[in-house]
Amino acid sequence: KAGVTQTPRYLIKTRGQQVTLSCSPISGHRSVSWYQQTPGQGLQFLFEYFSETQRNKGNFPGRFSGRQFSNSRSEMNVSTLELGDSALYLCASSQDSQGLSYEQYFGPGTRLTVT
Amino acid sequence: QQPVQSPQAVILREGEDAVINCSSSKALYSVHWYRQKHGEAPVFLMILLKGGEQKGHDKISASFNEKKQQSSLYLTASQLSYSGTYFCGTREGAQKLVFGQGTRLTINP
Image: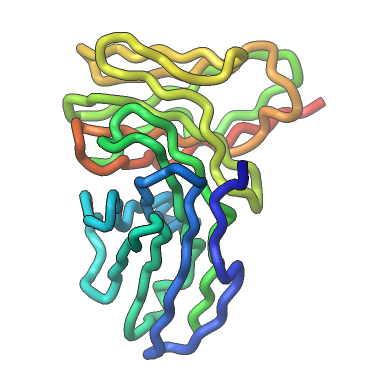
């Protein structure tokens, strides 16, 4: 079974621009979560989607948004990029509808650099 | 509320044992453990649920003290491949999965 895929793998943007990152979960997984990873802050939760509905949201500004499609693929968007948005963005999928008792499988991440 | 992991870093020789701890001030439903090697994505190790259920790899053991909201990951007879950063993640019911800051484990030959 194919793993979680994320595109693009690397991205360089300038301040003020916007960016869209894509995540395709493992086949059959309907829950998708997004995390931001930086050396100083570790793994920070962004959002979690299940069946096209946002189930949980982290403490990030409104510039960060996401959505999930009917095929469970998910996208996250960051508008008006700031230097501090430079990070590794990880997507993880899970098969559990409640997200409570199933493991998450992480994709390789998208490395975003904002200059 | 982010769980607190200890120690922040540990260095072992191959064959030695290690314990990584994770504690929360909140009542937890589940504790998740992941390992991340440099430049790679986190990989699932184990999940421990309130009530005692556990799922994970046979060679990994962990405990979950529900009264103290603490979990420990036990790495015995460590191998070079165990090196990496270990993260614990905690859930309060249906809430988001929140990760600790990580514990960097280095295994030397």
